[in-house]
Image (cartoon, rainbow, N blue to C red; front, side):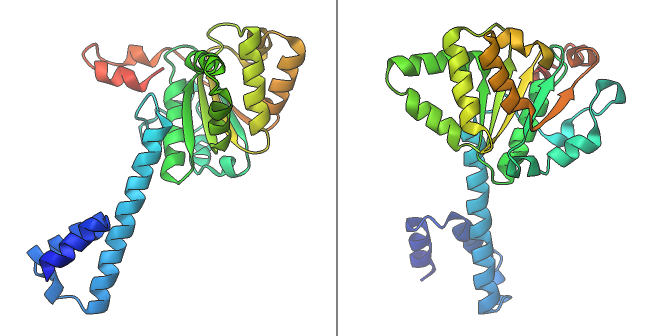
Length: 252
């Protein structure tokens, strides 16, 4: 009978329940629990398994550049990083309010890591998140224009509750990229949250975007409901031993 039950669980893809049932057989736990307790135990294990697989799927779909967490952040006072603010943002209520986060600072200071940590925290809380490198984003959208998949790509971004645009402002936007950015920000205004990281101070973004009227429209929508974080200090890369190359992936 147990073999038949196990096969049915496999067929229905009740993997969490299957694992718990097998463990209970091996430990003779079935003899210690009432029928109600056993059913509750199996259902709890199945729920946890499905929830964990859902979160893992969301993290994978977001395509984060780094594996990051709020717990591993450096909160030194001279970095301009307010721990209380970051912990409030980690609750992700800013997403419910459709607020944005603008993170600026020099290279290596930890902008991308902070953005990724907030994004991954949002995933664990069940929000749909997408990570995008600025340069690759516009290149991809230009290719999408050519193969008629542009509308689908824009719609996919619009469906996300949070998008992260990393390394914005590495180079000035051309007319096509400027129009694409305007469309992305317009679609998300009042409907979703955006985190942008940049080495360029926010007051210099007009020069990056280029055309004054479009720049005004984009920045008005971005800055109006934004938390602004300006990281300071020297590159965190200088704080790591030379042989810790794997930790360099945590820093941008």
